[in-house]
Image 1 (tube, one colour):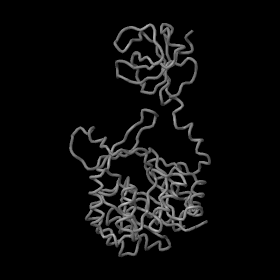
Image 2 (tube, rainbow, N blue to C red):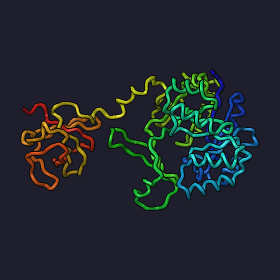
Image 3 (cartoon, helix red, strand yellow):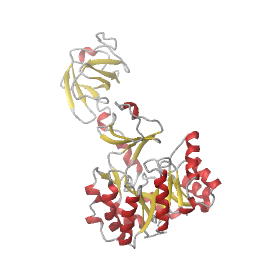
Image 4 (spheres, rainbow, N blue to C red):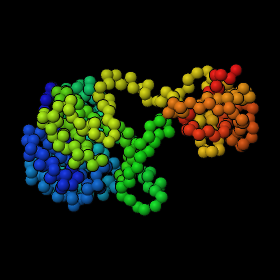
Length: 403
């Protein structure tokens, strides 16, 4: 059923942020608002301490603004028990609902607090309608919302909104999580070896030319995000017409809250049109619309692999699998047709994942033991001289100009 209602859902991490939010809420009284709060024991991306969370819950509830507790961490048993104890110590009667992702947390709230509304985070699972319907039926009236994945197209969102009874929510603006591990992957790389509760860094991919992936390590594990953030700001009105009233803007990174919150109020209130909305232009990273405008999900399959790292023609030799700077490259032979007699391989062409082409005359080809080679078969690993700019996943060909 169509619904043009728009509710801005956003995270608040401090009293200063809430004061700014409240001031704008008074200026834009026609904008419905929901505030998400959490603490470092419960929320994956929040640094808020428990004592500050208590203040936030108390002050926000007094302002008659809907306040939701975020408990989106994923835990092993011992840490789950600790997190549950934190939840038990909070004034749950002052919150409107609790956001949970861990099935164990869902069961815990369902059994211990059957009166407390649950907003179920399904961003990383249950993309299909059958799974969503099953969760909605299982939680019954306790389910006040389903938070959907940002990997759903407009057509899927429209279909789900027309069928599901529970209200839906999607991410309108914010980071896109690509990878999560409960392991602490960044701290072993820290040179000073100081124990830090929150580490930020950037990473690169060996399978693509992309770099600058935002990384975070905290007590919940390690998170890697897309180099581009999601922005569906241009589609706010359209999304509400689909039947999705709740749209979330996640401003917990890059000090975005203070810079963007006024613009967002203007957008939700209808005073600022999409055409002159500058938030995504001023953002420190590029933004994309993700899967929203995709009609058929299979059109993206060809983009899942970098075409430059795929075999292209009959002159193909193999792939660089290791680089020892200023010394040698490890080449994995991937064809029998051209590798039985390596004497014909006098000059090679290398195509890097970034698309750079390197031509090199080979003075030698050696085995992994350092011995000269005249023959090699498919799946053999051989060594060739190092050349600058060549990385892992570089594809190697016999140069076509060599007869």
